[in-house]
Image 1 (cartoon, helix red, strand yellow):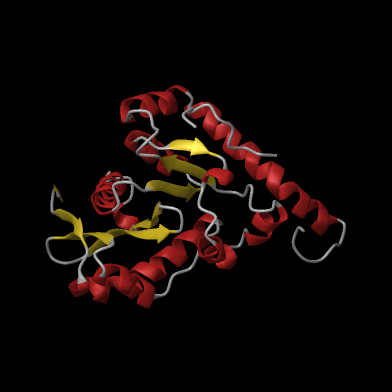
Image 2 (cartoon, helix red, strand yellow):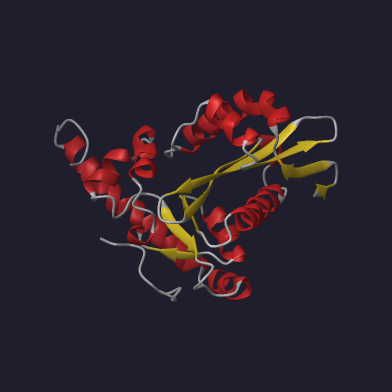
Length: 236
């Protein structure tokens, strides 16, 4: 796929030299946003490339533009993870193209799997909605312990565990090939309720962070201890 001079394609072993740049930008971006991210090593990214489980974007002269990869979890679940775009190419539409290509790759490789994602960003929620994802509760995600173990490096891990893995700062979204609305329907619903989603995200952040702020202010140490797009995903 081409976007001006940008190529978006399935990554291969020949792309391994981009791995360190990708993981550095993942960490830098998360730090700048003040949000959590499950950290990945360059070796992990390289493995995804060699397994044909990643999509990469680059310019015609070989400059890295963006990246996303596939993870497979117990119970026929697939996650499109680690979406990252180089700062100078953000807001250009390339993130949407990468998400579409990794979604199509997931459907090609795992046609029966449920595809899910966790995000703190409204922009990613919008892209997911345009692909047919719906907001869901955490209980509808995989119960694979390896998946949840990946959250340990996230700055919000204490919140996740304090909520018994039923809620956190991220919003869960799911595409079920056997039970889903058409992308046009989920896209329309998101557009019609965008302001509501934005307010709910802000409320969720306040609701989940407030106990930690209260503990800090009181001098306490440590952390805190199916087919319906209307289903609740804020499980307080």
